[in-house]
Image 1 (cartoon, rainbow, N blue to C red):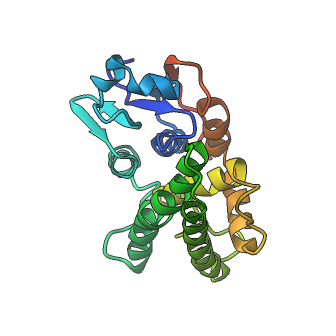
Image 2 (cartoon, rainbow, N blue to C red; image 1 turned 90 degrees about the horizontal axis):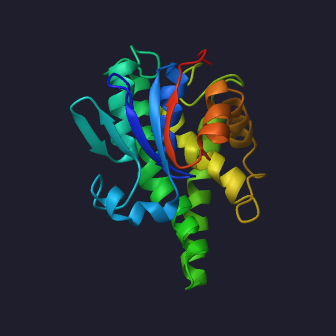
Length: 226
């Protein structure tokens, strides 16, 4: 870890991908401490976060958890307006809405619930059905929202913002991890949007190299922004 670089504690396919993706999009030097899932319950990691969850951010005197809070903090500290929108505007209202829909209405009750269902030995079909219904409810709203925008548009503007990163993480997870369980074909605007996100170099690095790094500390040098 370098003294001047933010450090993200990360494990494969976890919500830690959100702040990793944001920093990659901003072209900021940062560090990743990668863990196997089982290692998050070991005493060494529990000293960092007693809940045994990722992400955790360490950045100078700052130490915090919760992917949305970390993503917001990093966007405001390092973004210089690149991935946020002007406060008090209609665009800012939409930005705030989708930033929080991504977790409260989509990831937690839908995508994460489906993920934990698949890992559980107790296969209650009602749990899976509720998760998939929640996912489809949000996808329907999102597809309608995207129909109102141009083909090169992101959620809020014609450039990616932190809201796209918050929302893009569970969408890409659906496409890569749950493609056999959630059918995205009824949502053509959503699938086109995901493809626009995948075209970003930051997305390719995050869901490629950075997602599955071997355990240990890795310093990520800033690359060209998308």
